[in-house]
Image 1 (cartoon, one colour):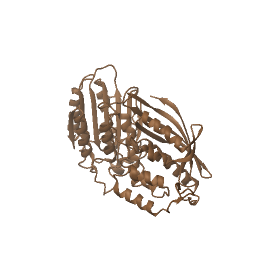
Image 2: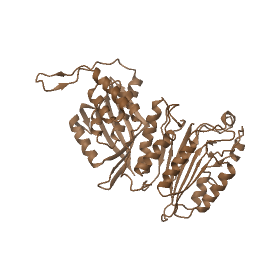
Image 3: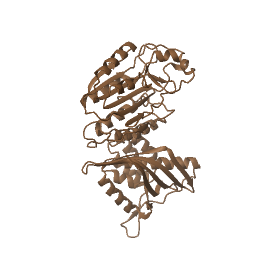
Image 4: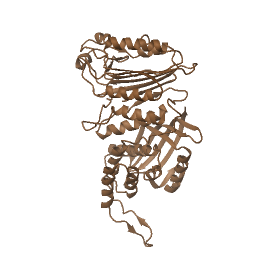
Length: 464
């Protein structure tokens, strides 16, 4: 199943916290439209999490129009001012280019967009959409998770209608709103990573549920999920990068104390990182990979096999210092391939940096040259690592996410300069302090041998 997930947080200030209510719908089995695979599983996963966190949860599976309308009406009536509300939908959906619609199980195949509208429920239309009705009840906080198929459920019939588009349209976020789609504009959202993928839940949901449960913080869970989904999709050569819009002016702590338990954000990263490591001749990189992924025996064995095949290290005259053998200059790649490799290398470095485990220092140093222009200073790698170790001690919880849509890169003579905007989140439970915002990062990567960062700088653009 190909689908999109939209997650919206809408704060209505001025009310005290009251009841936490959730309505969860999962539609897999349709009378005429294509059957889906993971909608019920995802719905049951969200139900279990929100119930565990104290929500009053109503779960509906495979519901036709009449039942959806009735249950929604009862749900609206139960909402009192000040409540915290969760509406979660997984199933078919479609868009006319501006409005999004959710599809009950008894919808028929049609070639008329007007008929399709009558057989569907609007998510938000400013009048009687689902989110409009919830907002009218003056809930303090509304969470909407909308997991709808990216492919047009009415197949080629409706796609010929004027204005009908692939996937769901963005929902304009108001102040105090957090919006996330499981795939960017024009992208599809994976249900699974092929026939051999037997994991529970769809690709986005399996990561988002775990991260939200572990961290309790929506922003941090979202940044981690965005990285993980992109990594997982890359396993099968698929492009899926969740997009999100953050208009929250206050805390994004949804469950618990936030930041007290953190997923390392790298569960599926081993596969993408292996694509880089498998061609490396650096003992430092290979050993860092083995140490980091010690619980992945297959990839540890593969990395160890490469290590065992490298030439023996030669001792210098003293007999006490060893050096790596001279690198063989690789064939000069095309400029676009060079740029893509440099960008992937920097992205991998950022994902290492976003870990929250003891192996971070070992992994990060493998990305830097022996001499680095570090924030305007000519430093050795040891000095850079000391600075980063100090930062990690001050901010033990970190989540960084590069915005590739605003990234620029240019390469000349195996040196690639990268300018990238990065959303950052850092938290210290001991100090009770959090730093988050948007920064402009600059890197220069030497691609002449094993890639190495030889220059790094950044400036904070905004904090929130």
